[in-house]
Amino acid sequence: MKTYSDYLSGIFPGMKVQKISIDAGFTCPNRDGSLSYGGCIYCRNDSFSPSYCNPSDSISTQLAKGRKFFARKYPDMKYLAYFQSYTGTYNKNIEIISSLYKEAIQHQDIVGLVIATRPDCIDEKVLKVLAEINERKPVIIELGAETSHDNTLRLINRNHTWEQVEEAVKRISSYGIRCGIHLIAGLPGENEEKIIETIEKAISLPIDTIKLHHLQVLKGTLLHEKLLKCEISIPDFSLEEYLSLCARIIKIVPDNIVIERFLSQSPPEMVVSPSWGLKNYEFMNKLAKLIN
Image (cartoon, rainbow, N blue to C red; front, top):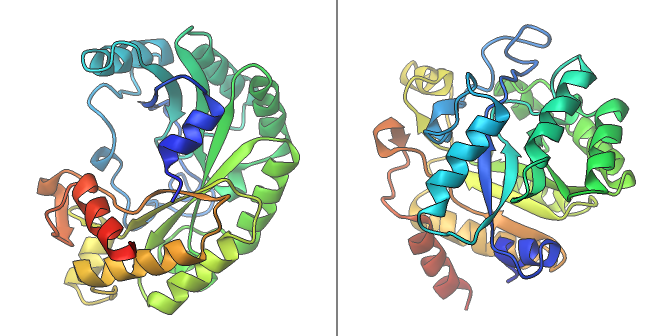
């Protein structure tokens, strides 16, 4: 199975690259009232934001802190500026978006740009800016799709549709920009067959990667609150069941699409469930034994 490291090596030959997360102060249309309020019911941004990632700092300052953080262990590393927090293309002022991206790529050891965003926040103006940057340094878009089931997308307060995912992926591809999609296994009301249906729909699109992880219930989220009140239910995958699901997914994803990951790891003190107690490499070792 081709790994995400293999994928990056194909884009950046001879280099070791690492993402540096950036919080550029963006929000989301399901947070600011454009579509809804509160964001996705499972989201807790501080569960994945590194300590060096602070929206009150400039892009250059955040990148400098990130490089310092990683350089202690990997002095020869090159970096990808990763607009990870919230929706990385969501700003009505295209000049502001353009200036943020261009500030990020001006640094010599920043060799590419990764933008996490939503399918309903990709328009021609943004894509023209990114296509121009892509001619200088590679650009990768991570599109938050989560599921192909529109009823689930409404339930989790995403408030976009799978049709918008398909349209966005095709639009991104038409500009020659690399695109991956983010999916979550174990969303409310979804069983294994619904997850597989999403995978099958995803691999029919012109994507390069799938970033998949299991649903984590985090303290302080609306999902946790709804579960406590028995207003919602989610699949209760055991570790063995989830490993089996991942093995099944590997079999149907073609070799030209890379699965970036299968596991999400939030700080243990934030996690309500599942509590499998595994590091990513331990999970991958178990998965490798299962598929070999």
